[in-house]
Image (tube, rainbow over all chains, first blue to last red; front, side, top):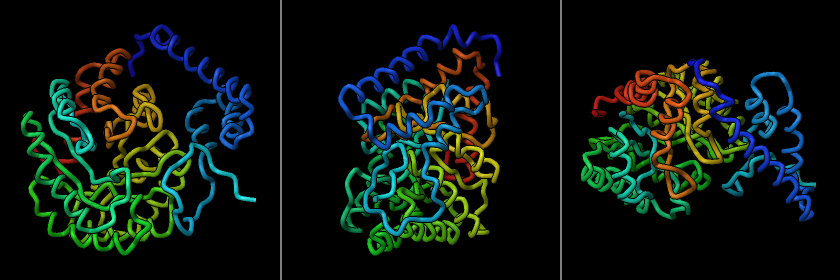
Length: 90
Length: 266
């Protein structure tokens, strides 16, 4: 892996912009009264992983946003995905 | 530079995209059968689609001197109707003789349902019976990790399918090690939002090595970029990788896998 390139020089501004986008998204859904959504809960639950000093943050965040059930579902009643596991219907 | 686009849904792209890809150094494009954005209702509709993939699209690409290859299957999104899926799978053996067909794909799972698994098994049996290469789609977003585990366990039941003749596509950081540790090839798909960005793809090469991995755009009718692979090459250069390394990842690696079918020539 090359070590001669300064990654902060190369990518800090981009990362900063993405952090601000995430913050503005959280502000936006709160302002519009839509923060109580299962996907928002999943996103908030993943944020401590982002702040951790342990490596493999991406893998651990992806795992936290994954369906943890092991078995096939009886039938596919829809085709899309939503980015976070849907809570079971009450 | 030169590269191979091992996964592009060119039926949903414009001729301008073919031109741009060739100008960027594309040496061949491979097109797995996929979901059209709506459910097709008849096997005859699929037969026409397979002819588009195997007859028409290679001619369109040839206008730009770009070799075009394809993979055949019914996509897992359309596998819930098992009667239709059976009829479509029955069409495939005759079409495997077409000179540009590379194998069975992109099969796999979408929502990880029992019927999807049944149709996956039938596709795998077809590949085993006809000694075909296999290209596997893994599910989207929250369904990917579970689906990848189910897929890997299912393939294990087909002892004649060698892992080095199977590529598990759309891996991300949580599934790449599962795939590579079992000896399969892994495909990293470069999507603006829902799969891997160029930054993350390069990170995965650093984390998991650069053997048995290819990069693809999986460009289709959705939010995707037919030039995602050469854009990633540029990002690799910015991060200090030399031209030989980039050529290894973007040209030699897909060439190594795809050349297991002697029809594949660049």
